[in-house]
Image 1 (cartoon, helix red, strand yellow):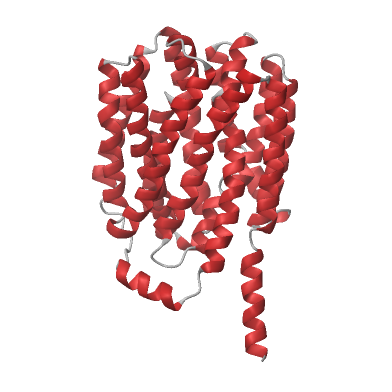
Image 2: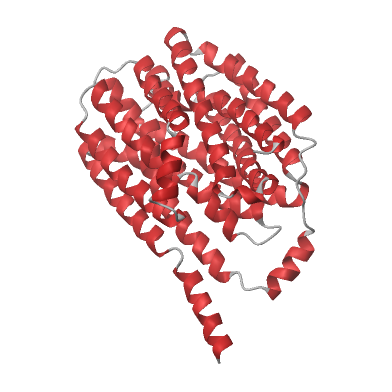
Length: 397
């Protein structure tokens, strides 16, 4: 990998480690510490994710206009302000407002990071995005393990650790990212060229793959919301729950050689990787539905992790492949916003279903959503094939 990508990887590890001190425990903190219902917790997380959707879209456009360095710095500053407030005061209303602002700030950072990864190593293809994905999950493993340990003593220390790590991230970006060269293109020239080129099929393909991505995230985020609260009811400790995410991150890092071999020999296309991954997601939620102790959730988490290793890196790679030159930021912002949309809808939907019905009903709905997500994935490239067919017919005539 080029040096610039290594810097992005290091920055991503610090960023995600910082955020992983807090996000896996949000539902537990709101439900257990602040005494709110699962539906209320889901609504607050929806507001957080909704702000992140706006941040993703804004961050993608900002990348296309001013580049990744300034965009990421802007996102970090926006994120750090409410984190400082939480260190001093984390009462109910302050917590809600802080989560909304944090959602927007972190939303700005991620599309710029992915767009930079594609720009600094275009010949790397899936490898560039997979490197950022692995870095994210290394951060998840480290942050979740430390966060669960700290939370078992006091939630007060979580906010302090989160703020300090974001300060470190700011310094790394300020001194390390400024020399990462990313070519930006005059927006006027992009608009002019877009009028000349037919990009409707690419946008339609992006919309289909984003729809499948959205549905997968609605299901996946239950592990951070309703399933997190459910584990407490079956007497799984905070430390054990955090350990599940440590296992998730560690497996993603350690199993890369095996997944790379499988992708190279048995799932060469990005589309096939996604279909396999979604099918594995279905198996994992079946295992989670049957789980009654830590061992059962451990098995379900391992299966879930294998599935995400196929799906999550493939999606930004597809977005990068579809993006016209100079629109990489917008395409990454769009695809990241749909993932965040899943994180927005998921906790509220899951919390409402769990409160009104039961966990088995929720798991049944999730399996249905994953089936729909697979359908969108199967048909996403049909607009591209139809356009290619029209071109061949035009040439032959």
